[in-house]
Length: 326
Image (cartoon, rainbow, N blue to C red; front, side, top):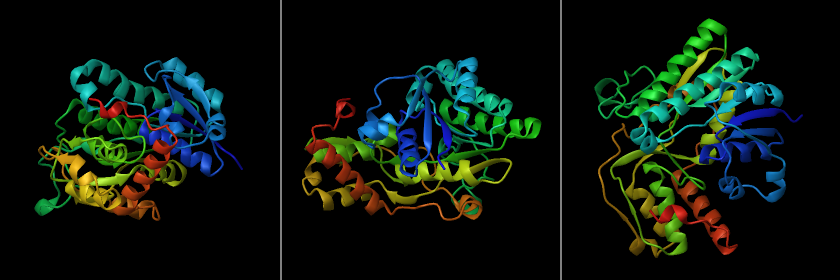
């Protein structure tokens, strides 16, 4: 039986994949976003799928609009992904706080008042600072003290705290997921989008430089979406926070895998820059214990699938490349 799901920020990368997954399993996504071109969705679903999505134009900073849209949707499951990324939060901290923190409070408040079953929302590995680690330098887990180095990371940490208070005060169950470097079709903004943009550049035969090196925790966007849906569907009651671990590799591994698929990438794609100032591996054992069976696609397979989809879109004349121009 088809069920309604209320999804904020669904015109972004992870949100588009969440919508694609919902459609694939026969559920009904109600998309709450500020509007604009749904090009990421078009890259993932056909026109019939797009017609099955209900779009509601609205801003999470407008509490009344959030509540009205959620109530009208009749959804009891909320996936909250609306937010501004690190560069915008750095340049405009007040705007970043309004969208990322106040917007999340509005979603949690509306979900609480309307007796929603659960909210799954995007936190981030950016809650960790560069020196945050587990005992003896192990990968950080959810018990590791967090010292975020960006406004964005601070806002995500605040959201985790607010969600905990909504549970203790109002009984609203929630799940925060903390991914790091998500890659795949639709990932075209922010520093960690560089590996995906490099794949796109190789497909269209353009040079591209990845601006960071070292190692990082890679997660295919489809697996990320499946994790959010697994969390909103079957997490236990409470306010939970989970690291979302994929596979940790040196960034150069993406270039190696990409060159296997597109040999010309060896001459087109370069890498230069420091590591991302976030621990390169996340301990995801807690999530695996609570929600077993979530997909973990090997990096080689995820890169191959991303290349293939970009090639399909390029052959059809539908592959947008504006993100390669900056």
